[in-house]
Image 1: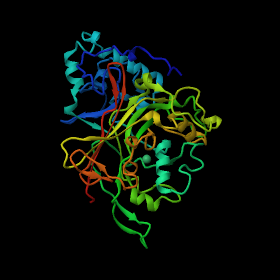
Image 2: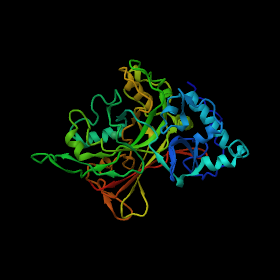
Image 3: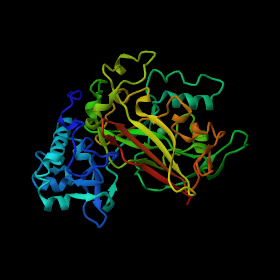
Image 4: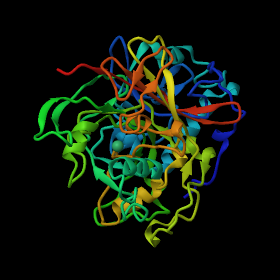
Length: 433
Ligand code: CA
């Protein structure tokens, strides 16, 4: 598939003529894709990020710097979503990445972009002067439950007398079909939902504001090229269908969830908002950070068996800021490679019935918890079923989220002298309507 092959865009020594801070999420090795418009107004275009700038790819295309960026008459960089670009497939994505990398390199400071002041002024825009948009028209959203540590923690809390993992968990990547319409861009506020809840000792359910609002640290996989109805995707070909990844916060109302989830799983507890980070980080950018996941025991059935390393070393952090705090504080750290089931297995399992994935579909990982207390990916786990409050640096304590709290997820791969970052996935809780 070519995915194992690194190319010149991965050279850790590459630097850009655009100034990029050493801790930037967006060095020249990253080249993410997003949708932006200038704050002053204008059309939505496809852009990449370099340092503190967005680079408008539609303007570069108009200047003739790309070849073959049309799909069925659609100019992919002029679209208000990434879907047309995502439908092109890995060969085209790699070619586009190579063109962008070559235009931005230090040695290209006198090149077709670096030496063209008019084009530079138009296409290279400070991030302060743009507003990002939801990058993908998401048709379907599936939420997995692929962290063994998370599933074990939840099992221990909710079924203290039984086995923490249900009998199917080690044999298949458990998931449910989620809600795509309420997947929103990072930065949009989250209104505390209302709903029906019932505590175990209450004689009857009651209606009111959720009192147990939570976050879930997740990673989202965006499908590029889809598969036809009736044709399963094999586990070893699954990555060919992946355009890239973004951070996902699957906001959850735990008290609503506890009462409603049996027998069909979460419904209203999860459907009010799911935040994603604005830039899609491609598998090409992540390739140098490919690694093995946890050992799987028992060995999965044949259709779920990978023959190569299929996950990535992506550091993840959860940051909380209450209304009384000046800046956010790290409350938990995790890693994408803690996931028991990897994205290839998730895709193979999702499609084994012949279910068709389509361009723009979002597959979220499920909460990514790790082995330690400091690696838990939700407030439910961090406070161990609301019994152990988190103590913050300013003296505030939290067992679940209060109005005014801001939760920010961050993710990055640490390279040699650079890092591949995801940009923030953030949201603030507002009081109920
Ligand atoms: Ca979830």
